[in-house]
Image (tube, rainbow, N blue to C red; front, side, top):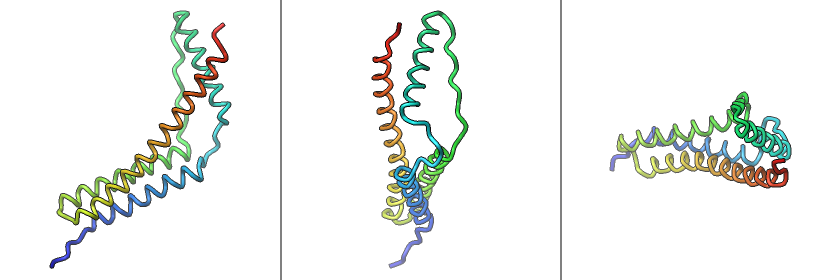
Length: 143
């Protein structure tokens, strides 16, 4: 039986493994750059929402949000997504070249899990922040 070479898919497994490991390390050991406290973030969001609402009700234009510079945590997240995407792309190319389906499937799985893990963590964080901001806004009131 002739053994097929699954070079692209194995590279995809390597990149997917690195991406998944990077996502796990960033989740457990991060954040790597200094972050404002949760209280400060919630307070800033609540004040920003209140000011924007008052400005719109007065007929003024709401201030445009400022985009913060890219920090180390964002670079890690972008790197994880790129590595996971490359793992998936290499797996698809390997599958198209008739490389072994288990190897290509492993690369897709690792790359997809790395991307999905990041998305799930961000979604969970956004839900928690939204709940906290809503609670603070309900306590502040609009006077």
